[in-house]
Image (tube, rainbow, N blue to C red; front, side, top):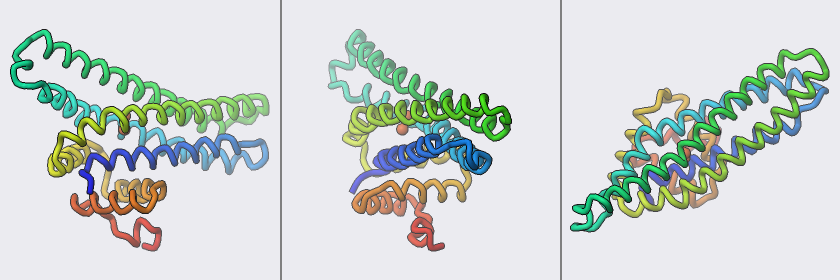
Length: 229
Ligand SMILES: [Fe+2]
Ligand SMILES: [Fe+2]
């Protein structure tokens, strides 16, 4: 059994699945049926843009400050009275936070340009412009996928283990509740996201994700996530 923070790993997997689908849609864009393809690509690009923004906001507002606090508290008694050492630990936390936040800004900028490119693709009539837009959209979709794949590795392998090892299940759940409260997402959109992430998970991950969400009264129902409701 894991705590609520582990759900970040499942959300990361879900986001990567969406980005892989976005990249596949970009690769499949062609002059034939472009209007229809561009509309579907535009919806996927907008969704990815919103997800990337919200995910980064929740982490920066709640998770990163909490992990910085863990860094500070992890100092053994006595050591935390030495100003130079506490300053070093603070600086290490600050540097890591600056790295991961730079990834967020980069991914957000790429996703925003991609969403704009998708809109222009639906409007362009000149064949030369359309071909150029298709190439740019393909490059940006691949880039945003690659940037976030690396970024999630940093969070999954460095940030989350540190927090998961030091916070109780109740403390982790409380942080996840704070993240949810910080996000401007309605119940329906939240349920829709859970359903999307669910599809990226293996059987054991699904069971863990479900039990974490049930404990936090956030489970939208088996029938809903399986697409039967
Ligand atoms: Fe992040
Ligand atoms: Fe993340």
